Image (cartoon, rainbow, N blue to C red; front, side, top):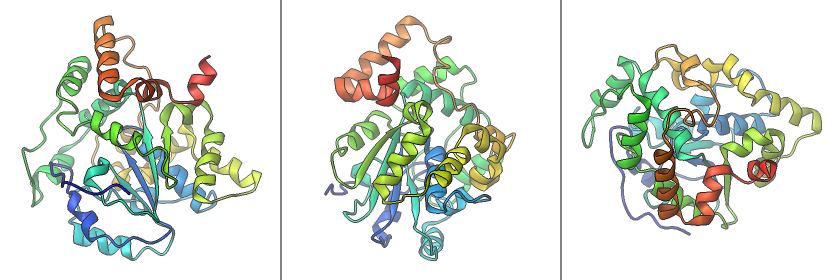
Length: 300
């Protein structure tokens, strides 16, 4: 099993919470780089665990563990009190996470250009309460996070050239989780594959977790995991009901689409991204990150 070799601190993260976390044998850890489809996968997991139920407060049920707020002693107590099968969120790379051999890990990824576009909306619509929670809470390590550049192309270029700034490194996150794809307790999922075949990917996740339902229930689960359903119920799936973003949950659950960068980035921008992906990830991972598996087959 991978070993933790470092701590990760910034305006968002405190990786030390995992040092004090007591695992249960059936825990599910959902990992990702931010804006890669994390909330979508949280909805899928909640629907599988609770058999397609309505009215689930997914953000509260599936907290971001390494987020600095609320303080870790509060979050650990809340998670310890959960009686259902726990499905917890992390944005950490593998080497900053305590890895447990009995837990199930699901990593969801997305093309970096789509990540940056979604991140720009997330950052642009953040309100004063968002900045206050991150920059004003005790325990901040490193510089505070500032306002984003409103020019999405320049925001993307800065994010790529500075490897994830002003958030955290992107390539290392993908590379470390990709390296674990053959472990029996790790499942790798791609955002584009969810879009290409949502029922099939939900079934694959359920099989990995040992959760199976009849066809009618699986159909209801798929309906509840559609973008249309999540957009209509954005207050249930967004953190704090969307209170930290202008426009609320409707801003947090934004477009759910890929490729919005195609009409904005230049040919050179795109070539630079492809070259960077190959250098950072190697050909197999870079090809998967660009298209996923199901989407690549369907495109062919």
